[in-house]
Length: 387
Length: 248
Image (cartoon, rainbow over all chains, first blue to last red; front, side, top):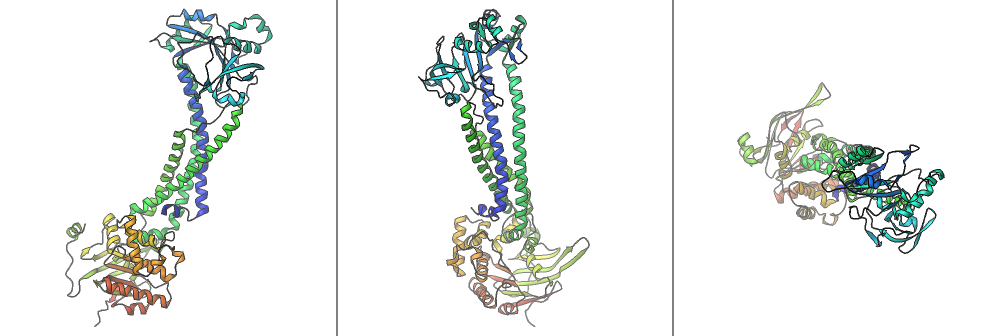
């Protein structure tokens, strides 16, 4: 309590210094919440892709997206040694319009031919209702993040790409991609997908053979990366990617993004730290005579040092807590606003909350070290003479 | 610690017959630098003694070295040469914890301008010194309450210094100086910022404590009335003691 009183002796200065730390922690929390969300998405991806090979067509459409491939290729893939099962899947954007700005995941439509049953280990459970059964047309399950966007209720209907579907289940929160996915039958998804293709292509293909990728499950003991290389070797017109490809591409780019985001937040916190040094140095200077008195009445150098470090820590802690609260409020408001689009941007995790406040407190302590050391080592006579 | 110090520095030198000296300043010299080349000799071979239970004034013109002498005796600074003995052991040259212990346990300070910590109330100001001496916060607060009662400020215990008059603030400072039951209380112009009536009141209070508790007081003062109220006056001039005030 005494330390708190000392910190707030100069209320405006204390407020401004704490405000500096608050801004730093606010940016750390907001930026950190974004990376936490992205990290969870990627971790989900790592879990999903970790035991399988993803096969796409080797060619691209105008260099932008991979061409669809035919589910007939399943038999080619299942002939490759080490492959246990191949399952066609189809993924596409939920909305017709591609979002111009996007952070994290974009709402999607996902479908599978059902051949993955018994092989897929990434199971999304339902919070309400039930899972979609294979071949169940006209029905969907909805990811937890897009329930509001679609106004989905179990037993009700939702409109997807101008077609109505009955909602049979709402998925549990996974904190990763399935939270923003509508799952429907392969046939329904193929129909919707075919509508997106140019008329010339649409007429030349069987839409019910379309897939955007084929998921390959490997036999027990087989390395999916090795199998991916084998597929690429044996079926050169397809492109097979193993878990390492995913990790190398996505995780590496996420690490860079994380480093940039956290770096920006750290810089703002460092500026806050400098303001703590400035404030504490001024406090020591203003209270030189008090330091002399304290030494004269028996304060050890350690006691003086502890006092000023505690005051600096209080500045850091107060700034940290304020920044956390403001950051949490900001991310909550933005997430609520973005819930309409089904793509919450931020996730304030416990480790982020505790880490931010702890970091601000430690920063306060470190920033207070030199002023405290300077105070502790003052000559008491000179300090007492100070006006 | 006292055994260690005794071993390092030897026992106290023999003193003249009479009351046991609690303070012995032996040939103290102290030079302060003024800039890079100039300096001032604040003390040159100053020597004096104060017996246990005495109330002594140190007087002299400005620059005579009386405050410097008090700082050296109070272990707030160390002499360039000479010795300081407190309660029979040599204390000049002590460092770190040993020095802090002497300041906390063996000496009480009263300053001109009261020098209370502005964010602490009267009890906390007094208790702080007891906490530095190792008492728990609750024990220190209890002890502070006793001392504030002694100086007649029990009803002002929760007041901040800014809510107290000059005389009341100085009484808080007296309570603080006594909180660890030191044998010696050093006062640097303790009545310097007080009016005559309040000054008399403070001197009477110190005299009563001196009599009742047998606490030794050494008061640096410019005020002849304060000096007159003391048992003895040590006079200083140009960094030396010119008269120990024992009379002819």
